[in-house]
Amino acid sequence: MDNIAVTTSISLKDFIRLNFYLYYIKPVTLIITSIAFFCLCGVGVMAVLYEDLDFSNSYGIFFCIFYVFLMPVLIYFSAKKNYKSNKMIQGEVLYQFGFDKVRVEGAAFNSEYELDALFKIKRFRNWLLLYHSKATAHFVDIRSFNNNDYHRLATKLQTASLPYKVKL
Image (cartoon, rainbow, N blue to C red; front, side):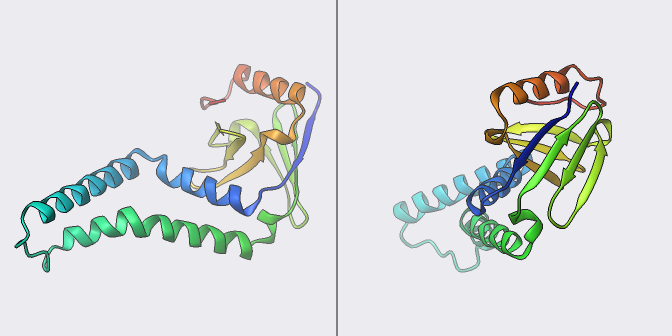
């Protein structure tokens, strides 16, 4: 297979969206958030029905409020801070997909990975996520590929004998 090269960059808006996705895709996070949301709804209904309830010692309510309302705010500001403080994220990145390697070049870095050394490869909407571990990934904007190159890459990744399942 010939090398497939694509140059891409990530905007602040997309970086924040990807951070939300990476946080809320975990089943544990979804379950805790759902439980916290339904608990808040139940407390709201009880507050309307029973006006004399005392919530002054209800630490669970504060946890629910934190998890449902404040956690997204923290994720937003954390992602914004990380994006603005890291020039490697903001700049253009060249990805070269070869037969069994991925070469990643930016203004301040240059790395090469074996495809089978990656933790996993996953697609999320218009992004191809190349995970190095459970927590770190390169974000490749699929819209930067020409249509033929992306289909060639997807076919190659799905037919390759990699130690992980490719989700495209």
